[in-house]
Image 1 (cartoon, rainbow, N blue to C red):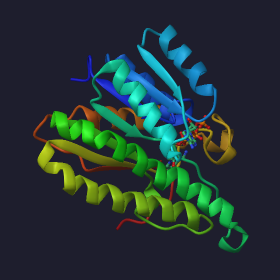
Image 2 (image 1 turned 60 degrees about the vertical axis):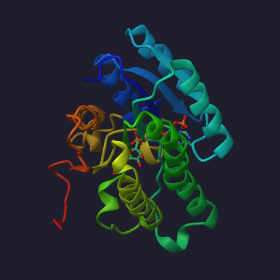
Image 3 (image 1 turned 180 degrees about the vertical axis):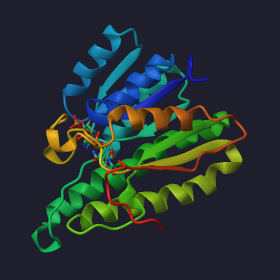
Image 4 (image 1 turned 120 degrees about the horizontal axis):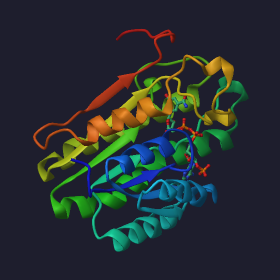
Length: 239
Ligand code: NJP
């Protein structure tokens, strides 16, 4: 079902995004991957060596002009975009009184404005085609709150609200929109390293890639609105 489709994956240079790109490529999906640092080209090289068709684009998802250029490049290159995975994101965890305005603005710029800009850029294209899937990697803290992560939590609640509204706007165009809300994943998130011993029981990047694949390959008459997943070891209050 994903064979010969084309996907844009933001934050494809490492962590969950890189795994999502690799998993989609294994299904035969052609890729445009976006990241703000040069590492995006290294990631594309690796994926290409494993047989994937990949266009790497260095762009900051919070910058409107860079997003416009990146999406134009991807659309011009492939002439088709079937799937957008809004995955790029960042986080930091500290008490609110220690959070600077600059940090607050930065995390909103990438996690919320980035999702807005990328979604906005692809919607006219998908509306015209009357098809497309947009999957956003949000968080379990888009549905529950935690201490010492208020700014990050606020961004993911904002993402849930934004995505929920957009899903209703575009339903009539055959566009399917969902969020994946993971708990702790073993990545490079919040300036950490993948593979650290305290993360042994955390979700693995392939768990997220698997969820994306499931959501993206749902039959045409079905929308998977939301997938929540968290490590069995993680405390998780049920709603
Ligand atoms: O993080 P990490 P994850 N423009 O740091 C890119 C959510 N999540 O894989 O730009 C474009 O390994 C960055 O590349 P670069 C989380 O909120 C995670 O864990 O070159 N790209 C890199 O490729 C996020 O939405 C956990 O630095 C930008 C990627 O984003 C998603 O999972 C828990 C960018 C980040 O890779 C993937 O994060 C949870 C920009 N401005 C939700 N800024 C968790 N890890 O525990 C960053 O609930 N990137």
